[in-house]
Image (cartoon, rainbow, N blue to C red):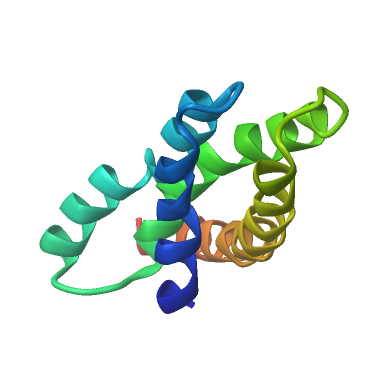
Length: 109
């Protein structure tokens, strides 16, 4: 999944000159720095990486839905739907991972 998510979200940097492009890019790639620290801390991919996604991507998904009627450029609008689909699938799995992680941490106490 990371082989799809990272490139799709990084493409947002291409559209920073578009209306709301900076905000979309910040939300699309904003999870990468926290996830870099999580990768180092956990020494690999783990369920903890879901947490930054759940912080940055639900507002991004809401923003995409709001922006669809604002007259953004055609290429940016097409990219919205690719980004929306990829991040919606990821957020669905991330929510499951976060709930599982919270349950595991609660049982460990």
